[in-house]
Image 1 (cartoon, rainbow, N blue to C red):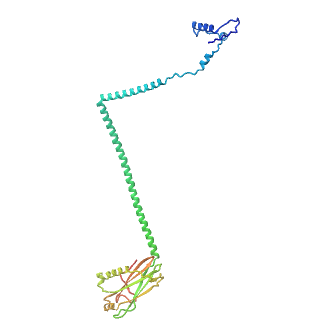
Image 2: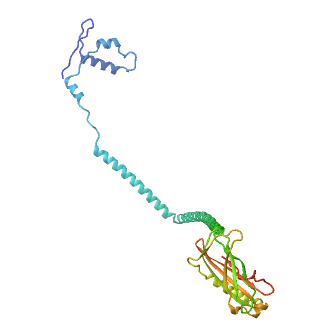
Image 3: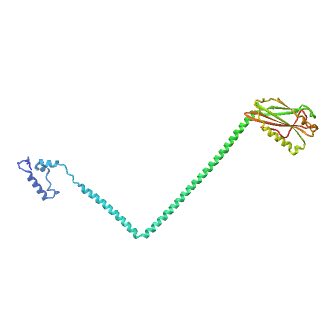
Length: 332
């Protein structure tokens, strides 16, 4: 090692080397306390008396070497594994102590477990009851809602039916106000009934509606009725038979058209009487002459019917204006 010696500039030209200075400094440090006032060096003297040395080349190379890592990886791994084994041993020891405790106090543990099960069972029963009550309330609400829905459906159905009835009524009213209405307004004989005399019956009819009656067909029947037949219901029974024939009467294609009438304007239809129907009982009034008729016509695309009944009784009715029967009159 090379040591470099500096000379101080102090007067007297005394020579100081670094080794002597260091030796004296160590001797002074050992002889006195570092904190005593006598051992404190003078700052001016340190500046002038301390030799200035530079580090050697070997010291500089040693200082520049990087610090070596002092850690030991295998030793660190062993420390981690040791800590892990300690934790496992402590855990197993606690489990062993717990098992020993349970084994020693088996009855107490069983009793505590039974109590815990009873408490949990009671809690579960209460919870189940609450759930049942909630579900029951929801079911009642659903039933109430369903009942209200059924009522709404029923009300809607009734309203729908009422609307249908109202619409149908309005349609029927419109048809009734605009359709054709064909019916008789009078009937008469062209003379007084006499045995062996030919007679004709004249029937006047008119259309009181607002549409023409199309494809008109007419049917007339003449019968003699005794006074005893009316109380017995025979007269009414004959009317019903004829009415059934009237309802089955078909319109006549390309038949007569009866236009709407104004005022007392009418159309007259003539039908001859059978010669054998006028006998002495008709002439004397012991029998009645019954004249039944039926119209079939088309209006608003539908076939309609009108039935009528007139009678002649000597001494009660006039030949030029026959009486209207109590039965046998119909219109649709």
